[in-house]
Image 1 (cartoon, rainbow, N blue to C red):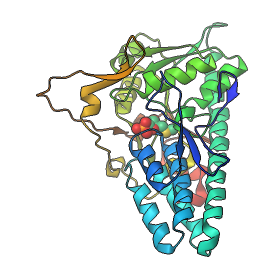
Image 2 (cartoon, rainbow, N blue to C red; image 1 turned 45 degrees about the vertical axis):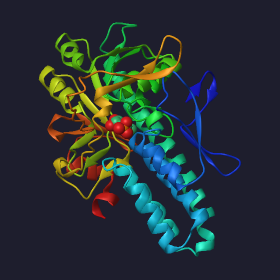
Image 3 (cartoon, protein in one colour; image 1 turned 180 degrees about the horizontal axis):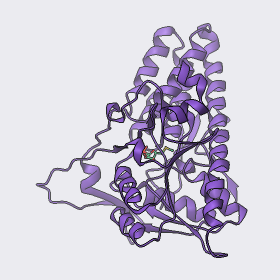
Image 4 (spheres, rainbow, N blue to C red; image 1 turned 90 degrees about the vertical axis):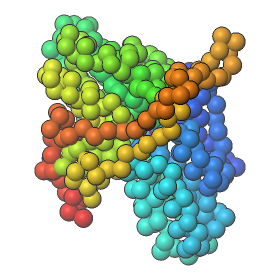
Length: 364
Ligand SMILES: CSC[C@H]1O[C@H](OP(=O)(O)O)[C@H](O)[C@@H]1O
């Protein structure tokens, strides 16, 4: 997407052979480009959430593997680098998917050919992510337009989203935000309720920033306000991303998503999940089998921010004697999902719905 008129992706190959990313731990107050020159930096970038979001995690792992193979392209080197990257975060299936795709493309090659081939495969994976998300935007746009047709002229479609499934969570466009950008760019009035998304505040820090840069009207709300807004008829649809969706349509996403789905179900608000196919895990049926990342309690106990003088700092929120628990994801059962918005169209959150759009994957 554009930042002050300049087109950006979240990750790209630099001319000197490094990989460059936007350091998302500094948003919204600082915009800094980070250079990744090796496996360890790529693994740290994922683990420390300098890059985050299921598709972007996969893309970073793909380039991380390409960087690693420059140093050791042997079978053992390939296996070791893939294992290092896989261990960075457990929930987003795109990490495993991307690494499996890279290994399938590279293993048959002679070691001397692997580094260049990995670089090309990582670039192709990124380009495909952009195309997938643009297609999700096109299919999701129809949903927004149908809601707009029911409103008074000029009255915005009010969309609630949780966490950041925006272009900052992908290579470009985003998943949940793609229909929003497409609608806004087409002149369909939209207004977005942005869940702050404690504790890492991906909504307040990232979604608000990217919507604002694109000129999309939005308001940041505390996570606990969504149910109240839905009860008052102030939400026309909810759309979120996902880190792993099972073959039967159970959706694993950022902690708090399940509570929004419950509130939407209770208030008759349609609840959509933007789902790029690399995020479907056909090997799992029951969402409760998905590993839920437990992150440091410090992310709950401390809040990063900018001082009045413009210096980055963090403040303690909780008593020093109070430990914190920090599960980073939850699972929304398929029964609470109105529909899945994929690059191949919109389908019910059912095994049949998903298999109908991706028969070749379901059958594999
Ligand atoms: C388009 S996937 C975005 C997905 O990833 C986020 O998790 P995290 O920021 O911890 O990587 C969140 O679950 C988003 O919905």
